[in-house]
Length: 84
Image 1 (cartoon, helix red, strand yellow):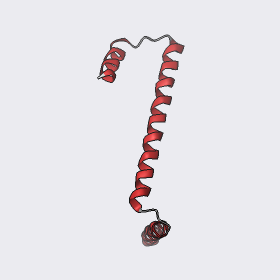
Image 2: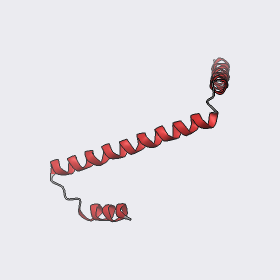
Image 3: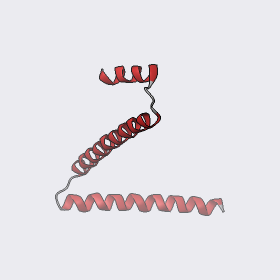
Image 4: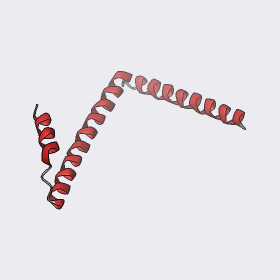
């Protein structure tokens, strides 16, 4: 049983690696280099992270307003660190 699972894992990893190589090869043939693809992915990840940060901040502010919480010492320390 373990042997079949090991074979399946190895086969899957080889298949995925082959697909990835084929993808990058095809993209290079049409003029998109691997570094350009990586730059686009990093930019997308950065934008996504910034959007998530905005959503989290607004959710935190809404929760604090809902429960009428001023934050106390922890909020003061957070705001001080955030401003630096």
